[in-house]
Structure formats: C-alpha cells, structure tokens
Length: 87
Image (tube, rainbow, N blue to C red; front, side, top):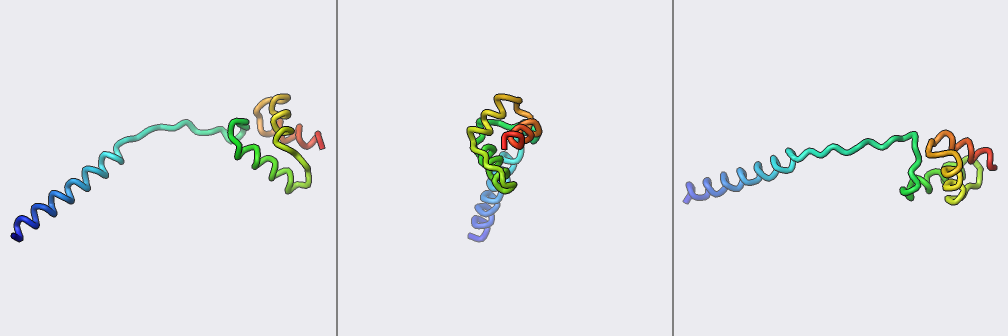
C-alpha cells in the first residue's frame, strides 16, 4: 500500500515538472515599443497626453492631439511643441 502511494505521488510530481517545463521553454520575442513616438491607435496614449497637458493648465482634447500628429508626424517632442503653441 505504501509503495503504491509513493509511486502515484512520484508520477504526480513528474507530471507537474513536465507541465512547468513546457510553459517555460516557449519563448516568443515581442518588439519593443518606441517611447518617442505616439500611436493614435492606442486610446491610453491619447488620454495620457490630454491628462498631462491638463496638469500643466493647457486645455487639449483628443481631437487636438490627432490633428497635431497629422500635422507634424508621430514624434512625441514635435507633437508636444505643437500642442503648446496651440494654447
């Protein structure tokens, strides 16, 4: 009885080791996002920019950000300068 219990426990732990090994061996490389560019597809980026300018005391809407990106490009520095000049 004790031998059967030991063998079943050993089989269980071996199965657990195999499960973790399969998950850890699967490696996928994801491209890094460029922090100096603005993506209009990401809603959180628009809300971040609007909130940032609101803290500075400049009233900017998401449409203003979209217009600035279309006018000067995706560079974060250029867009911020354009939005500061709009105020």
